[in-house]
Length: 438
Image 1: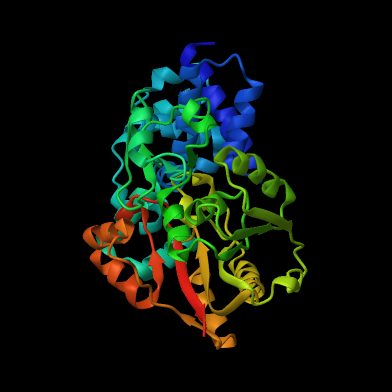
Image 2 (image 1 turned 90 degrees about the horizontal axis):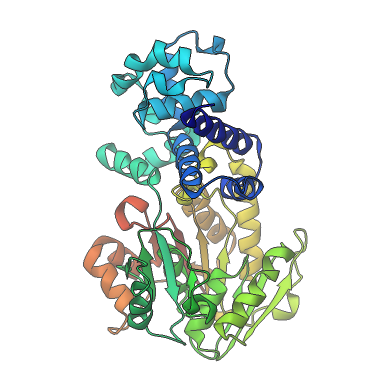
């Protein structure tokens, strides 16, 4: 088998496993590479880049095939092998001859010119933008014309690697210098005062800086959600959907080990991942509790005691398509998801004391999961209201938001609502709303 054919087959095999899985693509990729340890680093990079490229451009590429080959259903290839072949032909400039011994060669010779010269204006907007109908419908309500196209293009880009500096242990400048000595190609994030950004994706887990707890991996948008909660030393904070604890760790860093945090989640395994991270960061003021999915009053002993509660609700993850492009091809059950989000928000709100703060957040771009959930919650919880935010003049994060997106900053001050977009802010798409008990 030729070298090109071997690469084609490996990428196709990996994509088939991803398309058949119900779990996230990155986990499938990791397991595949662990079971194929004989693959060199160059071949791994090729397979990963090809697979993620196929996932990002799937709708556009299959629509092109359907347009130039009306009898595409007669193609004697699995969907994954067809998609990999078309992607390499169109995106990586492979020639028909490169597909010898792959099974795709006859189709490459038949469609090579037609696909490479295809007029994309023949496609629908959703096809051209590689958006599934469920996502295109919601985005087109919020963005129009060129901005919708910029948004879709940004969602198809590869995400940066963002770090959050543990400011209790090291300054941002010190960590920046340490990483750049390792040729880590690191820069300051534009908004978060504790963030660093890398354009390359090389491993950092084995560095002394990571082992000493100097930083965690966390998207800048996620850092801004914790920042919006405005935790103050000495407060009692509840992270109601803590997961593996990324935002818990950030909140703890801002509290400087003064006050206390209760991290909750329905997934015991995810909460278990928090413990070694707390130890590495030198954090001592976090306790955890596993919740059941049915319980309404499991935290009754904490009713109206929390200064602030963060609800990072389970969602479609539509704001993270740069990292998880496979999400877009799994249509969510939005009605059921909204009911779950509202139930969680209602349960978490019982913990907030008088004049306490409640932040509802998602990594979603959908109105149905964001503003609609807040509207529904406020209709049945008149004791809460949207809360304007007051930032001190020394808050460099807010100053950066004012400088780079004055409209967002003004809206945040007035309403307590934060909406981050990949194409505007180069973060994951995060939504957060600050509420306050009257």
